[in-house]
Length: 163
Image 1 (tube, rainbow, N blue to C red):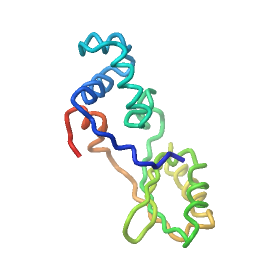
Image 2: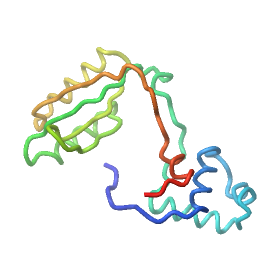
Image 3: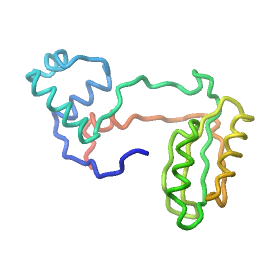
Image 4: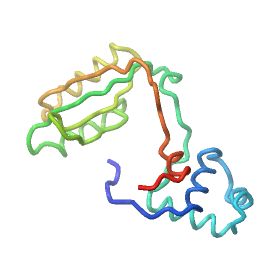
């Protein structure tokens, strides 16, 4: 399960500029970043390492379009979890590969999941597995018909968004 510690650190213009470069060119070398920014290689390396250590930036793998990979169905499912059983539910849910994201939420339900599947039949099987978890008391699923907007937080930070 991802770490949940507070990772906020003040970002200055240099941090945002480095993040912006990484958004545009994720495979760029430290030397090339130094050349583009006019900073010393050591400064760039240290800044990137600090951003990584604080988990402001993480992961340098490719972004994969689920539909292009054959995962045509996207669903959002809310769950109501039995009192005192959240950790057990989270442990079991994280074992389901098709569950891409899990959020704790306010309101009537306890968790919000983003799920992908190849077909509706596959989604049905995944939902059956989720419903079979002892701690799950209720589920409600919405099918996403079309993605209208998908933003990358790094671009928001790189353009100077201030918290």
